[in-house]
Length: 161
Image (tube, rainbow, N blue to C red; front, side, top):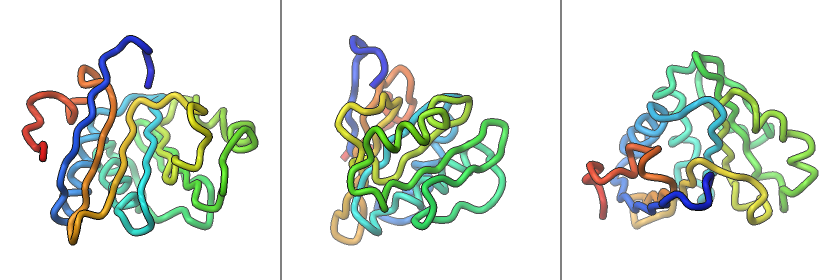
């Protein structure tokens, strides 16, 4: 997380339906700033691309979000561009990945990295970390970031579980 001395809050949300995952993404998308990096983790089918679809919509980006499983990067245009990375095909996304795509991550776009757990620990400074896990038929979203920066992490969220 940026700012080693900033308060970091973790929040856990139960998402009972796919629409709730998209709605969470829209809330995150409404808060993003140019240059933000969001790390997205979770098992296959946990809803990572669904969350990205919500962020995309919340940002007002153009086009239709698709899973980039066969491409490392898909770009979406909007007032602020969205770079959607997928690290699924990388067993370990280390320096080679950062050498190839680092300039894309530190530009004026928002970057979301699916399968970010494949990055080396501490390899990338993120504004927000989101993990999606199965919780029966539902999903559990675990978010970690600075509450003064992300409204979804603020005390007014009321969606804790």
